Image (spheres, each protein chain N blue to C red):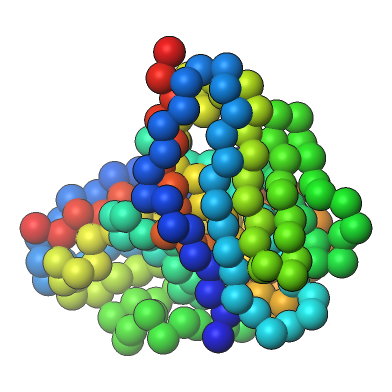
Length: 116
Length: 116
């Protein structure tokens, strides 16, 4: 499978614990994005990487959230001291260089987080 | 501010009939892109169709077409000959026109149910 893959697909954690999600983008895609989606809403932008550089972070990304893309390939999103409000689906997407064509943005299946 | 509005929380359609999902957008930028994504229960965001603000003709992709009315700032998705597998959430999104990358702003979505 050559699509965007995310792991784990589902995670249940107790409030206060740390969790980490991994995203493997499509090979050779230099741009990687994280989005968060809560029930009944559309995805909201969290952060963007171009290669290993994190070029933008949303205000939604509090100091408990950290994302890395150390070698410009896979990325991790860590949430420290989880809160119930962190319960959501975390979507990863990747793309090549900016294009006016929409079909360069590919999403993974998401990682569902439930904080109890 | 840039915003996407989808006013239909849910829609029903009979199999083999056509259905229109509404989307209006708000932006002051002359250059932008509009997308429709399908999200089945598995969670993956599946790209359906794209319309650029300077495109002269409405976009079409198989059974999907986009009714783009620039003056009204609307970009409705038309699905012809609905199939049971079309049952899913549908999101309209707008590409942020500046910044050099594909940051997407999503609407709240419309849940489509196709009945046999």
